[in-house]
Length: 135
Image (cartoon, rainbow, N blue to C red):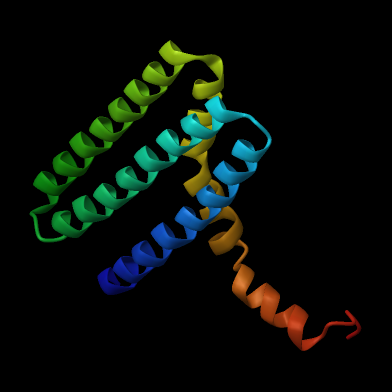
């Protein structure tokens, strides 16, 4: 189970990097430089947070139950404090940076929703095997 999570984490970071690169490039070409920079900042914080969370969970498996709960909870709070300061810093700069950072923090969650919840690989394989849509 842990090995599956580590493999997922590796693919997750690569997939998110691709999605963020497309979004940042699109915003930059539209001339929306502030939201593009905010998106990069928020995305970087979100993916690093996810990576750290994976390390925390991996380490928590080797701890006694009570200690693991406290360890995970403290790291959970630290991650959300980091989100708070990221958004606060973006808001101090400009509203464009703030909304870009909000989007960047949400990108990994949306990637999980779209690519993993709806299992896009299986959906694409089903479409390729039956391109006409007829049963």
